[in-house]
Length: 174
Image (cartoon, rainbow, N blue to C red; front, top):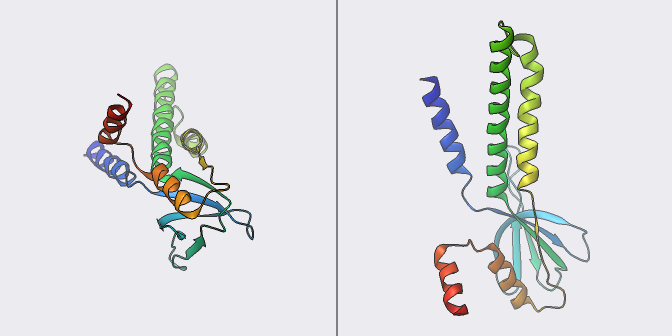
């Protein structure tokens, strides 16, 4: 029963992170860097929103494309999936080491008193490695472009690559 519950929780966590959300870093003349989640954009405006919490609602930020100097984007869903895989790798590593120590020495292994120290170290290391492996930001070069071209560049970077889009690109090349 314990394995079934753990499997269901893991599957729900993995499916929950496939919702293609993007973080956007905007540089304007007034502010060095502003980070937010992508909401929408058109030929004149880019809108970002912040993550809401229990005490503070989400805040919307609007930018005119003429004020935007540079953009960086990151797929937040892939980053969260990398962290989940890292946590799984940390749990697996701790379990394998604990089992090998129990088999060779008998007794408690890494459990008991040492578990309070070793489990967070393995989980934290796995999470950090997963985060760093999937944390790459894409820089969009937009210097000297008009607002319509900036918007098209951003939307083309945000589009998810599907087999249909890849097949269309291959047909165009031929």
